[in-house]
Image (cartoon, rainbow over all chains, first blue to last red):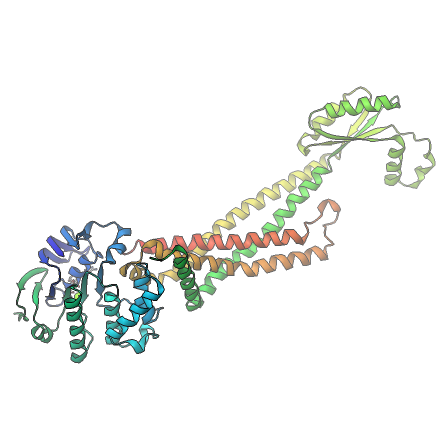
Length: 229
Length: 299
Ligand SMILES: Nc1ncnc2c1ncn2[C@@H]1O[C@H](COP(=O)(O)OP(=O)(O)O)[C@@H](O)[C@H]1O
Ligand SMILES: [Mg+2]
């Protein structure tokens, strides 16, 4: 489902965010990406959703060569994937309901289907009461759940999430994990999740890929957090 | 899948929502349109009327052809009439008998000449109309050379000078309007660009969730169109009622009937329609241009 070959990414300021990364993630897998701040986790996510282009190497997601997409084709590619952004990226002038609905409108679903699905999703991320609120009226945790809701609304084949539990208390984090596991299990959605949360990684053990200074330093099938030294 | 009209409906709805949620930007962009459109309206009203004046004066271009005293027979008039019509650029030749000539003379010089009534000392004459002011001089020369013609005259240099001046004003006005148009597009594009700048994040997010560039642009363009139309409303009302007021105070003309003004209906209404269409077009162009810039910013 996801294949990265010899991928390197450096930014214009000369920072080498990723170096020679080789990864293969199969359909239906649930994978953690861990690593200290600045190790390149978000950069990896941005390469997967087409926001950044690798300097060398290839990024393939769901059979699409993401690094070579034309500018105007990028949004169409994104309809196949769901992304939970670290900075939420909710449309400030739309309500939570409208934000989730928007992601379904652009792919051309009809009104009735959209309404039904948005209600379903809001229920799933426990935000039904906040449907009419605007993003700025919500707490960080609530906004995070709204982005998760939006990302899964169109039942994507791949869900990539940049620290989706970063702003949540442990209880809510577990709730979100339960939700992600359910999506992974029931819809066979491939999930790539960046996280800092050692507790979570140890509790819900999954394949874990560790980054450090842009290198993949570990890829452990059985999971568990790796102490950095 | 859903139809084109459903999508269009969504775009219009979201454009309206945005207009109301960004009231400040709607007002500032609209007023940028308003200011330029008021100037534009003034020049449309002026240019339209100048065209009319020039037309009026040109239609007054008539050559007065006085015949020799030996030209007294109907056959001679008929032959002269066809000779005049045969000349290039001549559109019309109207006979004016020596008695009619006397009446015109009395009208111009006063009743003192009334005693000549019944035995007019003047020659028979023709009024010749040419197709355009530019040809009047050559045609007059040609007529003078015809046998049986005593003299041929026209309004003279003052009339053709007037036409030259009006033409200059008209062309100058047109150039000014072109400049103004350019200014309006630039202003609106810039105002919208500034206001969309605050929303470049929004544009990026729309791409993030799978909206195509085309889809993103649509509501902005509709929004731009409405901003343009809102901006045109005040100039439109001002142009119509202002012009109507002017028309009525001046009694429908400036000094003489050669400078007859165009009537508020339909001219004022036409100007209004042009303003609204122009506002809408400029709004669409401006916002499309502005959004394009931000679409390119992010992948
Ligand atoms: N847009 C950017 N321009 C320049 N440098 C960047 C940019 N984004 C990230 N970086 C740098 O790349 C490195 C990796 O960043 P990032 O991928 O955000 O790491 P992480 O998510 O693991 O904290 C950091 O040194 C960061 O400062
Ligand atoms: Mg990060």
